[in-house]
Length: 260
Ligand SMILES: [Zn+2]
Image (cartoon, rainbow, N blue to C red):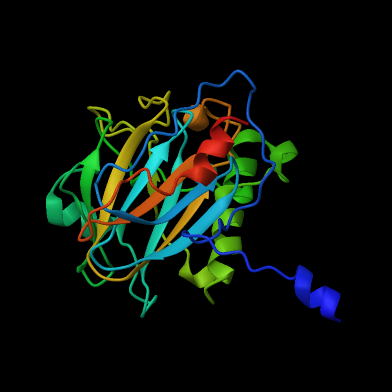
């Protein structure tokens, strides 16, 4: 008994443990740029979302989430909920109608089903972000690409897996954001899902206007070009800009992945 006591150690870390599985793969020659937070502040969370995996976290009011497109052209499908009342959740029509613009850019207020601000885009390193293209699912994959893709892992499965951790389910999945996905609205009104315009290390930053539950599916789609047919990781960095501190002070998890 005493020996057991003597060998017991306590491990402490300065950041929350990653919630995502490890071991997902991408092409070994892929260029990865892990970048850093777009906004200075004390790092409160710094996670790697492996390719094809899901992620969620509550971002406290005032904190800023930077999403890094580590491998370039990787769609990060995203849903937002009021952390204390998830019946109030992200709304595509409220967001687009309020701003009178089809794309999400710096300054876009991401609004809820009640028309109230959930988050605001405070930084964006690609021309435009999408919130019209929707999320892939086994069902839509089958319709678009044939019955042989019935068992391909898809964003809807990721959303369900992650939502279940917060007591949410099918009825809570609504239209979503697609960070880094290129869905141009053509002159005739047509939509397309086409080759991306992002690059390794490009970022978007969103500030929480209240405590917000953020749910992300790192899109596993392999049947269209939304992920360059090579799903890659995302990095999620949450900082508290009210507290000064190096934005690179808690990146050990990401940097070890970068050298792997
Ligand atoms: Zn997807």
